[in-house]
Amino acid sequence: MADTDIVCISPVDGRELVRRPIMSDAAIGAAIAAAREAQKAWRHVPLSERAGKVSAFLDELLAMNQEVVPEIAQMMGRPVRYGGEFRGVEERARYMIRIAEKSLQNIPADDEKPGFRRMIKREPVGLVLVIAPWNYPYLTAINTIVPALMAGNAVLLKHASQTVLAGERFQMAMDRAGVPKGLFQNLHLSHDQTGRILSGGLVDHCNFTGSVSGGRAIERAAAGTFTSLGLELGGKDPAYVREDANIDHAVENLVDGAFFNSGQCCCGIERIYVHERHYDRFVEGAVDLVNKYVLGNPLEEATTLGPMAHKRFADLVRQQNAEAVAKGAKAHIDPKSFPADVGGTAYLAPQVLTSVDHTMSVMRDESFGPTVGIMRVKGDEEAIRLMNDSPYGLSAAIWTSDVDAAEAIGERLETGTVFMNRCDYLDPALAWTGVKDTGRGASLSRLAYESLTRPKSYHLRQI
Image (cartoon, rainbow, N blue to C red; front, side, top):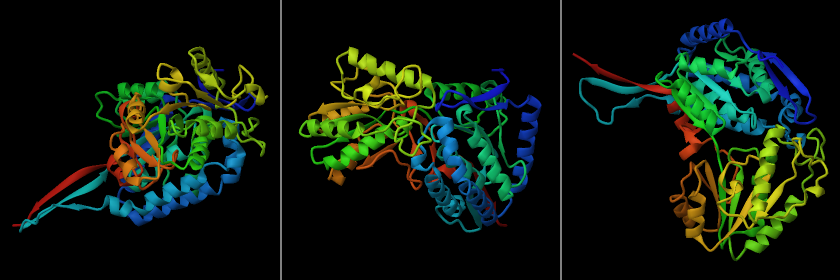
């Protein structure tokens, strides 16, 4: 493989799926110049017209669903039976379009002052770079692309090499919708080129979704440029099943929250703490449900669990499982029940581990795969301590019949989102954010518009 190419190796069969040449530095410079020029005009386009263009882009993207679903399966392994991502894409995009006018309206001064007109306006930051991941190639990117354009910015998209075709789909939909030329551009960039764009201060805001190490690299590259950053990084999201929980509901939803997309979800459940009263029943129910998964080719309708996006990701989870067992954990799922699980491939059987503790990597480090550890707890205090015992903080889920208790526990959790009786979901009306090594900044909700604009004050004196 030439170092001038971006190559996607399909986890389905290990073959090369697509290859694209990396852009030349001259082409990158031209793209940035074109984006800057297009943004000068776009920022003055009435918001209603921007909404029309962005809505037309969304319609064009949604029309591609039949082609996109098998493409996603081929690129990163999600089974076609789940129908892709466009239901969530539409929900988030339409909501962000709908709230744009209110979110971007002028903010008057709190008190009136005779003879003065005072207000704060929201101005677009200018040029936004979106660095999107492979695990949800459309959902993650849409979080920033739509509000950035609605706020009057231009957007450059660098998609993950594993899902390079998703970036091209975005461009195709933009072009078909008649979005002004240069305003949105999908770029095929190397890591070094991306770093030089940031270190050169060539963009005004960068939104990155990926690993903690990737986020640190982004911060280092942008250091001293005053480029604003939005970083959604790693996660080790916990769930707590209280004594008053509906256990059947908790089992069904937490198993799905842990194993959907082969566990490759930023906010997927990676560790579960169950009240001792329900522990045995919960484990029994979870093991029974996990054994019903069908691991196989994601292009086949019968498959409910596809391969991980790359065999190196599967190797990491295999290592975590093996380390846990070596330290005394019990593995409840027999890999032989999943014949597609073959060492050295991206196909990995799901696993449920008990007798785990926080000395084990599987309970401490991000797995991002189809494995989950379950611990017995005596009550709220122990659960809160264990849930907070992590360098990450994206979301946490509490399973209870007591709303007040869930809110009170949530106030003590070091996390960006608190769920009750659900998990692994982004509500576009709420800020998607994290604490600790999970990153900084916020996407979705009206707060997304604050990240993608800057305040400009007007102090106008009449004489």
